[in-house]
Amino acid sequence: MEPFAGTSLTDQALTQGEVLATQWRVKADYAWDTGVAVGRFMAGLKEGKILGVQCSECNRTLIPPRAFCELCFRPINRWVELRDTGVINTFSVSFVNWDATRREIPEVPAVIEIDAASPGMGILHLLGEVGDNLDSVLAKVSIGKKVQAVWKPSEEREGSITDIRYFKLID
Ligand SMILES: [Zn+2]
Image (cartoon, rainbow, N blue to C red; front, side, top):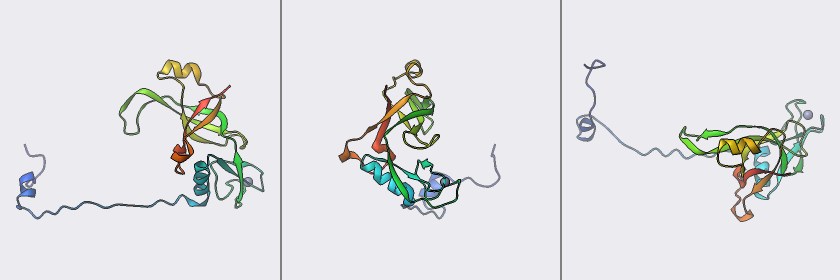
């Protein structure tokens, strides 16, 4: 039974000239501008530094950096180097990759509140060295534990959030 009225196209119709067909390779290059705040944050990562900004109105130290304070609606241009340590705000144990394929070894994304930033300020990253199964991860990881960034060697850094390989637990 035909699902729809009309004549279905076949591979042969498309390749043998029975219908007009054309082929081309889409060239969809694009560039993405990080903006002034995130751009400088990324440049800091390349140097092995985690940079934040301070609002001169409310004195909060914000990370990720932003060009204006979302509470005071004031521009921000005071930059500060934060520490590469922090505290686990929340985390998840994921057995699914970004393309929905299954992982045997879980990935542990976490929000890290960065030390020297204001409370609640942090970045999303991965936890590492926490074991390769759910039981070992849950035995080690909990909210409030201290972590430290594990950086790529300087010659491998490229100004990306992945210049930090992951955060590991510290005492
Ligand atoms: Zn402010």
